[in-house]
Amino acid sequence: ALSWLLPSRSKDLTKEVVLITGGGRGIGRHLAKEFAKQGARKVILWGRTEKCLKETAEEIALSGTECHYFVCDVANREEVYKQAKVVREKVGDVSVLVNNAAVVHGKSLMDSDDDALLKSQHINTLGQFWTTKAFLPRMLELQHGHVVCINSILSQSPIPGVIDYCTSKSSSLAFMESLTLGLLDCPGVGCTTVLPFHTSTEMFQGMRVRFPQLFPPLRPEVVAQRTVEAVRADKAFLYLPWTMHALVILKSFMPQAALEEIHRFSGCYTCMNTFKGRA
Image (cartoon, rainbow, N blue to C red; front, side, top):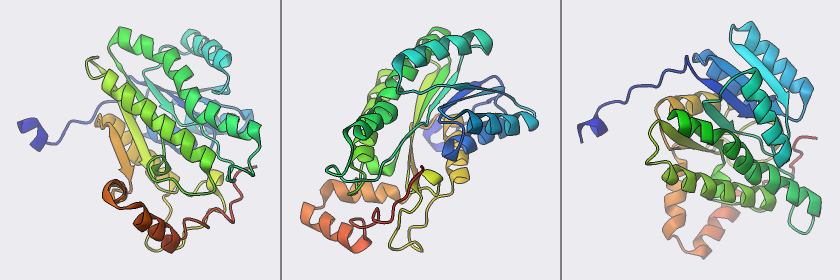
């Protein structure tokens, strides 16, 4: 019981090999820089755009941390397994897997292209199945590893206009909750799920919050810093900002009519009207 009262000791990252999906830009890029800053031995970047991956890898290498990049679309199961094998052969065993890759289209169900809807589910949700299946077995064998998911508060409090994203993130959250419980009896292997509020990245460009003074968008570098700290502390779930806990609690007992009024008052029904996103 005393351990609950005492501050936990932060995990040393100097022996960790960290792989980040969607690592070329946005939160992924800042995560790569933060893991390097906090002492990771090697950083590996996966993504679909080689130019972004190369630029980020070069920046990290200049800071003194060994960094590698591989072009890989996590939606493609066979490509994930193939590139995972290449990573093991060229770089070594991955000890920290960060599932960060995601897409958002910002359209209603009826305005969404079928292929775009499928793409969201394949990248945002199923991609985690393939990457985790590729790297978790070795972590379990070595009794050393960590699986991280950059999720979203929209997984627990959806808004209109991003039905594909909300659905995929809800599925992703269920995946991580199940995985976290399933690993409780696996010594040395843990999980961290990060649920941030709207973050000011290119991916959500144009999203409008009605009361930005009360609910300012998060800076990606802050999300990255807090994520790495949560990994080092073996924290299972991280809400950013902490006030998002209140949102989840309120939703659990408030009637639907009240929730609808809150959505209308806060502008959630129109926040995606000016959405541009990433080309």
